[in-house]
Image (cartoon, rainbow, N blue to C red; front, side):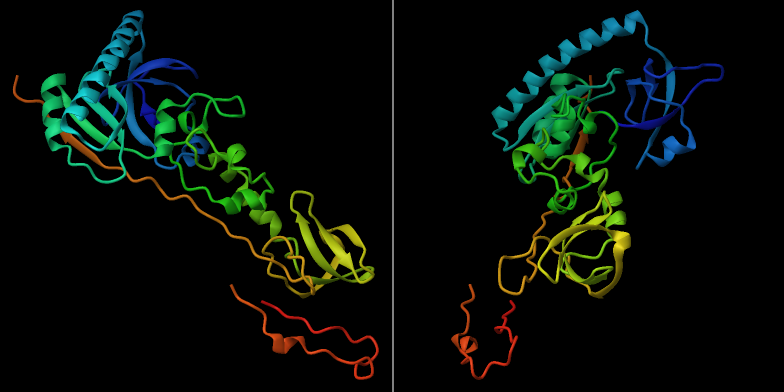
Length: 325
């Protein structure tokens, strides 16, 4: 599985962006690609960098070995699938990865519940004649292993620069006024796209400069009520006392008399009470690993609140009673 890391180099060796190299990691000998120099800015952008050592640049012989390794992994994939079927294990095989140095084979799988794969590991260690590691992954990790390009036409983020994949919530899409069509905001994994997180903090920061939806404010033209926010433009849509709707800049708000809940669009009801929204958040994927060495060799309204008043009893300009929920 692709990971980001900080790798040392031997004295005098220099590498450029895009160079294919052979490196030593905590797992063993692997192939890698040089991205950039390990500057302070690059280190700050990494959540949990792994450390290692670049051994040398790839040679033509290494390229030939990698072709052979790819064919070997396909055969081992079928071997693992066959063993899972023999044992009747409730798990879905995703990928089989053999390290370049042959130190171990990593089996990635999906499963709803925990799986007792001790017998499977024992048999695979004998079949593959190397150390076997079982790694349970989630659907986001499956896309990281198998997906290629996203809807934007670029390689999926999880397989390029993301070292961790924190949960993404529907609230992030709503704040950025993205479409709520699941087919358009879902990634290759079927979950909300990771890129919805990229500008979320910027939207949150800019939103603090705007009065919440439902607020009663004072402008140069009198009192008004906030109906909507245009966060990137730094503007709010207001409704004035004469029922006109106007878009104004945040700087034109002189004061806020009463702050609204800011919970989204208003319900169409008397009194223009704001309605709420619900958000959902994605959970983090669970993972489990195991390693084995090879063998030797409803609520109705109350009618009492609907009392009518005669025209004689009502003072001029009196409004009907309002109910709030």
